[in-house]
Image 1 (cartoon, rainbow, N blue to C red):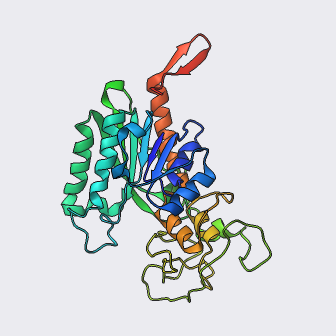
Image 2 (tube, rainbow, N blue to C red):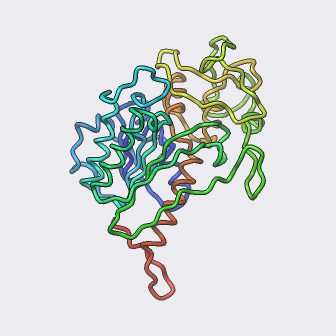
Length: 323
């Protein structure tokens, strides 16, 4: 894989956990993201603006993944515009896919992308990738339906090369609000954090520090009471590195979540290390794709690639991947 706008690496980690994908090159323009990614993967991410990195610097690959910056698309941004410069960064992903011709690409973005300009922005993005010779589809998914203890809706776009006969199907949900019909019940924030010790206790967990900013209960993002019997509200990346990051309340509603707890709500494992200060870690977590959601999508893509490209050779099956 080549990973664009890699951030902390949530999508990469989910794909890696399938056992079938390996990141060979990653990029982000945020030093904290690059430091964190490089601390957790076998490849060091490249720091820099993707607009200044030529396609020749990027290795050939089988899959391109990336959650192109979404601030311009988010429903939380009431001033969003079709011509917001940040929205055009998807063109860089388009450029890399055009030049590298991977078997598939996966892009992630916020729910607001569907509504922007009455759907015209999403239609434009889909058509642009289709013109490159890819079968492209999208789905609005809720991370809670895939075992993430968080109600987080995101648009997932998947494209597969039309000339390779690859049939991709989005993964079926594994969880539902009440469970049943072969699905598990949604994982609640209380359940997800039940085994994590209090950050003020004697413990050796990584990144287990928390914001001391006082609690508010006014219904706004970051100032809502968290119900321990439901998945957490959407973790956001709003704020800055100077302590202004919006952080969810702990389900006890007596303090804010620690970095480690918020990462758990995003389904990062306990040994995933955020190599940056506390505020930057909160922001990276809020901007990340939950690894468990990435794992579900990655698993579905791996099955699609295997069905199309595995060639029997005696008793051995060989992956005929481009790389």
